[in-house]
Image (cartoon, rainbow, N blue to C red; front, side, top):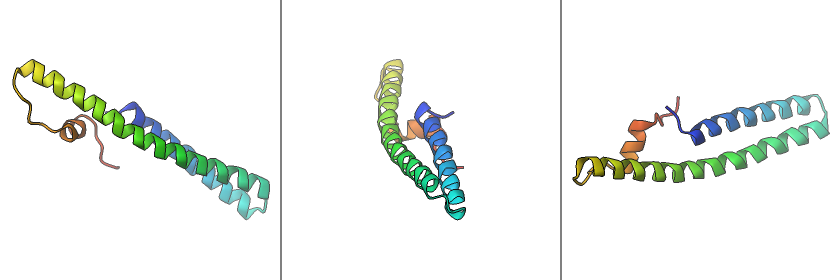
Length: 96
């Protein structure tokens, strides 16, 4: 399972990679205006990816705090699990 932000990051990366591929295509065919447009688009998507990755960290904190509070309320005892562990177990965060 992936979070909505993780899915967004994946889609943004696909669009970024496509933009850079098109930029290289137009660069090699000496079409300067199109090269610059697609290169700019790729750079803009890099900025969006960076912002989304920061949002992912916030999303992680909020979701894990909620999960830990829910687990503690359910057990009526302190929970020793870290928020990072809960997030990693809930969402497959390893790169594929």
